[in-house]
Structure formats: structure tokens, C-alpha cells
Image 1 (cartoon, helix red, strand yellow):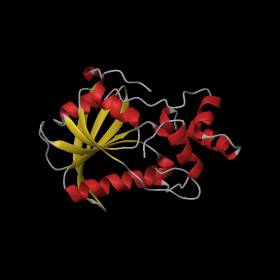
Image 2 (cartoon, helix red, strand yellow; image 1 turned 90 degrees about the vertical axis):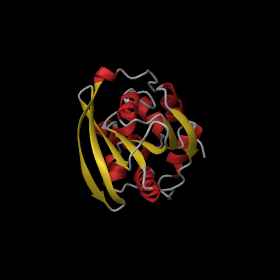
Image 3 (cartoon, helix red, strand yellow; image 1 turned 90 degrees about the horizontal axis):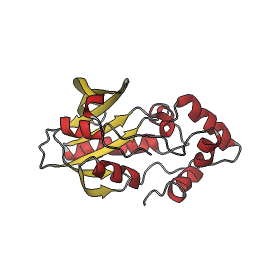
Length: 200
């Protein structure tokens, strides 16, 4: 996990447009960081004194797009969009770092190892990767562009809280996400709690 402060010169705002969804109309913003495109979905206008309802969500094609039951990613994203729609103000930072940062193909290889009895932590290591290879280096630049200095963070992951606070943004509240539990992801959720130290 990389907790270094963002180099603003590495992150560039590209464009934005309206995005109607099942959860109401968002604005979709595109940022580029070190050659990779990342997305931010927003509703409402922010000022630096607002405590902005926020979700930092790492891309999960299998969960977000293909409705996989192996994880809880899709339901977590849906929960965040629903909560922001109800509040009529908030932000989802959608980082393009599939499979805890190891990429889609490597994630599917990790799935194969999980089918053989390894957990997600062990599978990533067996493939030669860190257990969690995600980076949050670009967050400071996004928060500055959006004029956000305080967030109510929807997460169970203490690493995200630490990383955001190191970027100079105050986490005034943590909102637990307890969705997406099913028969197929019980072991995965247990591993997130036991080995990645996720909160309830």
C-alpha cells in the first residue's frame, strides 16, 4: 500500500459530462494519473467547509460490471451511489486499479488459486504480488480540484482512512458498508477482516 503524498504534476483533470444513472444524474469527471484514466462521480456542489459524503472505490470489472458474487464490490458501489443520491451531494472516486492493483488477468489467476483453497491474500503473494498493490497517490489532486477538505468516508478499510488523512483531507466520519454478503464470498470477507484488517 502506497501512502505517499500526491505529486500534483502527475495528475491532470481532462474533461467532464453529465451521467444519468438509476441513482439520479451524476457528473462524471475524468482525471489522468501517470498515463491511467480514473473517474470521479459527483452530485451537488462542494465548498472547502462541506463534509462531503465520499467513496473511494477501486475498479472491479467482475463485481461492478459482471455482477460476480465472489466479492462485495458491486453492492458497495451501488450502496455508495444510493447514499449520495439520497443526500443529493457526494463523490465517488473510481480508481482504475483492478484486483487490488495487480490487473484483471492476474486477478483471474488469483481466482483460480482461490478455487484451489488459497485465500485472496495468499493468492496474490503466490503470484508474486504484494497482498494489496493499490496506490492512492492521486487523491490529493482530486480533492483539491473538487474543493474538498473534509469527507464522510464510506469504507470498511482503515488504509483508505490513513491515506486520505495523509493527503491533508480530514475524515470527519466513517460510514460502514455492510452489503453484498452471500454464500460465495464468505471466505473472501473473512480474509478482508482477518488479514487486511477491515473494520465492521
